[in-house]
Amino acid sequence: MRKALTIGELLVTMTIIGVIAALVLPGFLKDYHKRIYTTKLKKTYEILENAINQACNDNNVSYIGQTKYGISSKANQQEFLDKYFKITATKTQPFAKQYKILNTGVLSNYGLASSHGWAKLVSGEAVSYYCAGGTTTFCVFRVDVNSTDGPNIGGRDFFILYIDLKTNKIYDGKAPEDCGTEYSGGGCFGRILKNNWEMDY
Image 1 (spheres, rainbow, N blue to C red):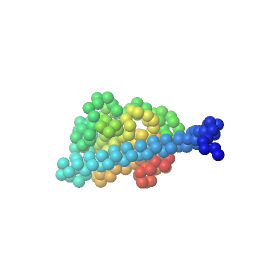
Image 2 (cartoon, rainbow, N blue to C red):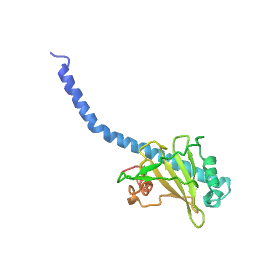
Image 3 (tube, one colour):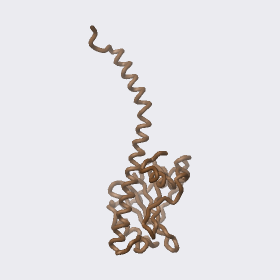
Image 4 (tube, helix red, strand yellow):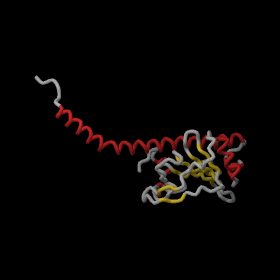
């Protein structure tokens, strides 16, 4: 009665396991990265929500638009990030210089304006905050969940969120069906919210 496998049988078994791993692993890693991006985006969203609420409480108002953080001022925008976010002391602009469009892979210049407040969070995310002022009813919050590290694709690791100055609501400026059509990832944040924090694209 034979009690052990032969070397040939072991090699065949190892080959089968290797083929199965090669077929399954890429899909697993893709889903794994999507979960990481979504988890970091959700955490940054919650940090932003808390920062807005704290700024309103500190100023004894109901909405961010009633504070100095809701007007067009680089100093005020930077102060909002410095005061209400846990940030690093980095002096280097924490965003990539270009981002790809998800559906096409085409590169687009990001061009973070000098009028934006920006910071790198201690947890590794790059954020920027900008309010245009005037009759604009929203401010813009940009987030790259892993700073300058790749893939630098709008809707994967880079998102633009809007803040309603009269309600404090954080929303997407584009429709979910627009997801993947521009470097900013417009529509993708809304799609993730709609799908209960799942990146299904």
